[in-house]
Image (cartoon, rainbow over all chains, first blue to last red; front, side, top):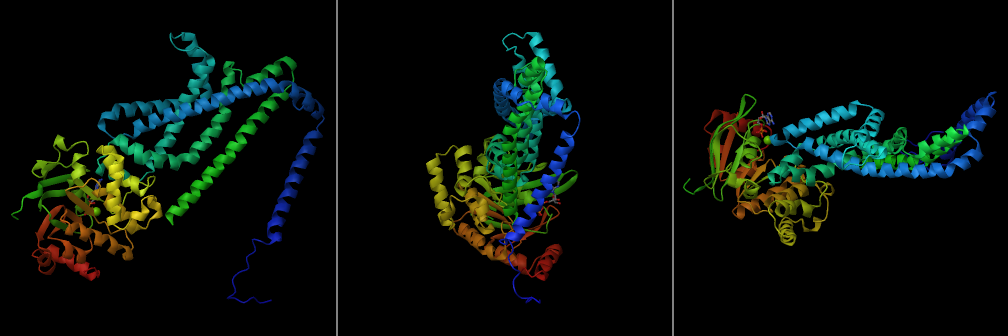
Length: 280
Length: 250
Ligand SMILES: Nc1ncnc2c1ncn2[C@@H]1O[C@H](COP(=O)(O)OP(=O)(O)O)[C@@H](O)[C@H]1O
Ligand SMILES: [Mg+2]
């Protein structure tokens, strides 16, 4: 059949075959792959033993209340740390962005700080702060491992976030600085009213990824004996020699991180749309 | 020029690295006078305007406003910018603020004006420029011509004595140039002192009281617009204008 060349191409988006068929194919292939995987794992001679140790519903139920309690601790640490990181990183980024010669020594300090805290593994910082500083018994400061471990997380993460802020500040057009200065605004006013609002909007997707990463990295504090979800799950494991509690903790973290990851995705998509519209 | 100089520039010299981009500029702008700067790209026109508004530092020479050097401490804290405003080719409006907030920012935050009063001024300016209906919009939602009209309103919000305009129509689609030029004509009619950098030669000839031709950071020739455009003395001015005519822009 010869189609009229001048006729508009048929809109096929509403056609159920074009929608349903690919979906069906992917569903079938997913079931096939995971089914085969499940069959392969469960057919292993060791499977019943593993199942009893990791997938025991009874143990999961028994461990759940304590692990959940620990999970609240994790989430509290997460939220508190988020606020502190966001603010401290902003201070670092602003100091680095100020151009007046007066701030040169401070700028140098910030650069050194960022280099150090980005260059050492978070886990190491948590151990050093969590065990080292309480041992000093500093007067007037709390001694809890949880507190100092949290401080280590904040200081480390802030170094990364400050760099994200900085990339956002650098991405703002130079003309904005000129416009603000030509109106008589000080550097700080320029940052506050013009540069930072644009910078934050530009780096929101990158920040969301940090938020998700931190949500699970707070589990690092368990090495200090902080009774968070991971620690509680380990305590259960140590007394019963059953690992199902670890899966409970994993499940709880997933419940929290997956919605955050979706949110991060949504923010990134919206940001992309905004940029596309602007360049049109 | 018998009228007292509002702006007096003497032997202004500025280097980028070891290359002079302003090379001994002498220029006076009288009260109510409109001076157009013309010259090829890279001749130093923008740098000159940016020095007058305090955006750039220079190496030698002086710039005076009503007889006072503009690097005088008395011109700090935004005082200079209140009296000498500048508008850029690329508008440079603040995208996260509404049109109204763009205009009231400096009056409120730099000069401590009451918000209600600043908004009244903003409303007057926007009405004059046919933009009153757009006060609550964001810059991205406006056409280039509308954005530039807002940028001019923002520059005028502190009621400056001198307005510097740096190729304010160069980034506009041709059909939007007219609306911005008509605003500038209106400002001249009200007696505002202006220094205008433009490639719109017809407009320059029409609006300027005096035209200065820049090349290599020097003013090679200045004079009344008709004489400059019809009978330039300097061979380089002639060559520049010839190129403009060949490009169909005069
Ligand atoms: N920030 C800068 N650093 C180095 N060179 C610059 C800078 N700004 C401008 N220049 C140079 O100074 C010269 C004059 O520039 P400009 O004043 O923008 O000229 P115009 O506005 O007449 O096109 C140009 O050669 C340009 O390359
Ligand atoms: Mg220029």
